[in-house]
Length: 515
Length: 108
Image 1 (cartoon, chains in turn red, cyan):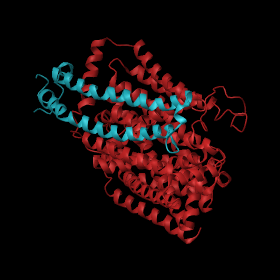
Image 2 (cartoon, chains in turn brown, blue):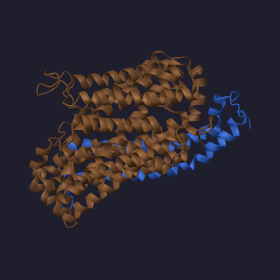
Image 3 (cartoon, one colour):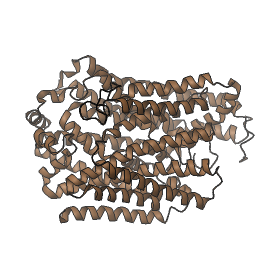
């Protein structure tokens, strides 16, 4: 590792540790630890949401998949972005009004049962680990390729950093690491895209002509159907991307970090614009990568195209630019995994420890101590898992997290917020069925059961790579049917629903947080 | 204003004209826009799967399918602004409901 790389990485590590030190002095209450006490402004939270959302899979993965598959790669960006409309129109404000620290708080505001809280907490833990461990594995592999450092050292460094941020700085440190990451990522990739365009004298048609020369797809590069040629797979993927974001706990708990409804809207507005602009930049980078590097070299470096952005940086600006882009990728990874650690921590220490094991009787100091220990435990467990999974291809799990979230958390949240006849049995059945079905489709599907190099070498029992189109409706219907079967009298349902519904819609405040 | 909200008859508040009007207004913008963006979003994969007319050039070498994909971005940007405006316009009404009905004990 030469001096340029070393300087960039030390810079980032030192910066984020200073943030954590500053945040640690401010994280002395549970409210501050879990939600930064609602102290972020809408714009800051918008930056943090983008930092939480744009993973290395989005940055490096989307650039790579656009470079290799053309138009179909861009569909991921479309889905990732439009999903924010679902969050905005249907989910964000009620979640902010109803929840305190965790996603389970939202559902338990209506159905205050420990059984529901445990199921919701389990869902958050499952989704967070499913998302976090593959990111750690991918980051280990990435740093090994980029910097030639040992896989286990990279995993330990990233796992260690994310744990330190959360244990000492809680939500405040996590938020500010994410804000810094978004600023660095956006300005870095914007700069890189300008360099790319200047190479082609700012002419889109020059880029397109060069792409057709470089890709084996020729003109087909710009036409749909290169990656996803079955309509069912395509619609299924788009459905999971659209509804998944609205079920991702680490994104939704970010709506507790602002103080009122207006700031929730501002967060969403800025997050949507930032994420949208970012995906437009990745399109330029994807095009640039295939035009400047060529298909053969991209695939030789990494068959999935994940190294497209770094390779192009090297081509355009030598070692310096490569070091810069690698540092950005590194920041991207630590910011996202820190967000996942804090969402898992909240689910464990707030929901499981405080509410279920201790029946809500623990003191403030106890809760804070439990939160820090949980964060440490969660950081350690995921790092250990990531260390043992070096040789497994787990990156596909990242996109499948969207399916799990869209078929368990999302239906239950939506029905809790809007449907009068929904009840606790429906919530539990919906969550459990959604999780089981989406995981079963994944395990029995061609990602894992595959005659050519799957973990289980046999014919897949479930035919689709993207199980969303089956799992999401099953999640919804099971929740609805269970509610209808175990229905209460409509009058008691009215009495239970009315205060909840009014609060969800207006934000009437009973604990000094909104309006 | 009493801070104790236990006495509020929420069913009555919910059935009050004020709250019903507020909900009608909310639904009036949320539902149509939600249906619109869902249809617009799924139209893209459905059109590209079952037809090929989007593959014809629209502006120069750029085909309709790219314009449609970019239109998704434009739609998201525009709707995010629309949402903030429309939802913000109802804030006052929500506040009135809270002030008139809930904090006074729901006997409005």
